[in-house]
Image (cartoon, rainbow, N blue to C red; front, side, top):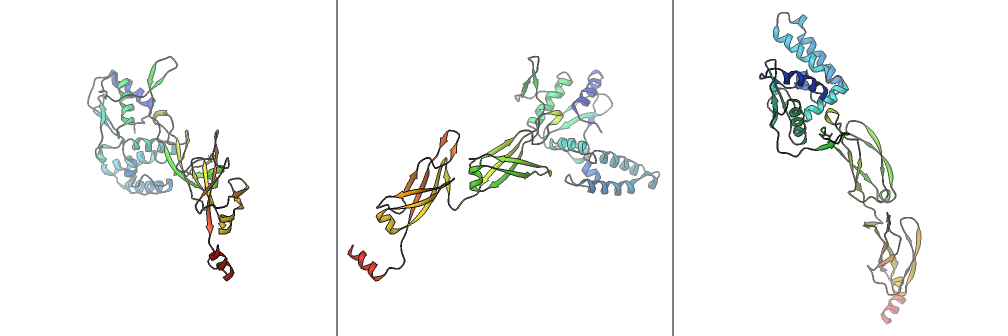
Length: 331
């Protein structure tokens, strides 16, 4: 197997670029298919499949059978990578960019190839976009510009000597979601999040985050290619509804039920704000559905302080005494 680290490619390229050009071809094998497992197989499943295949195609059991010998070599090579966590991680990233063995079929995306010694052709296929762009940059540099350059804009970084250098392919961002209660979003909370790979991480949800807000954790995503920058973990926060409060910006809305006599004559009621109980004066003649404002009792985010709006709901009695009916009719 050719280890496609940048250091290895550079060493290989030095020999290739100084030798007479011949058509050579090399594509990484799909080790999972060789072992008869899928890419999500556990280490134990990979090991079990390898043992079964190695036993079946072992040269001692298949003396004189060239096919079995070749198959045994293929299985042994395939097992070397998925059985090693570090190699497996690097290999999975290469597969992510579309590299696979020509025996498994052709990539639907563009690739590039380079001639060199040895009677084969080096060819790499990628899913395109940023990955293709960086591989083209790398091979163009190694082979003196013999690979055609696309018209895409190259991402650049500044070297310590003031020269512009191409960046290595950055790892993918990982996206996740978390649900919190209304009051947890208002006051802030720390939660434990489990990532798809089994990794767990504590995430601090900042006070005042709104529904759909995003938290970016740098360097917690997928690793980059050839030492490129690691991607980020982006968490979308879903705020659950609350039976007592709703939010619009920094303003908070709630409600209170008062008797119809309180709406007519005026009354005082206790209101639960985000932090404490406060007294609210309801003026005489307040209509059902009216909203009374408690200034500065909303949400404070940064230098902005919201208000609390209280919707008045009037309770109408379902039954009246004869005396009450008479009084109302007279009134």
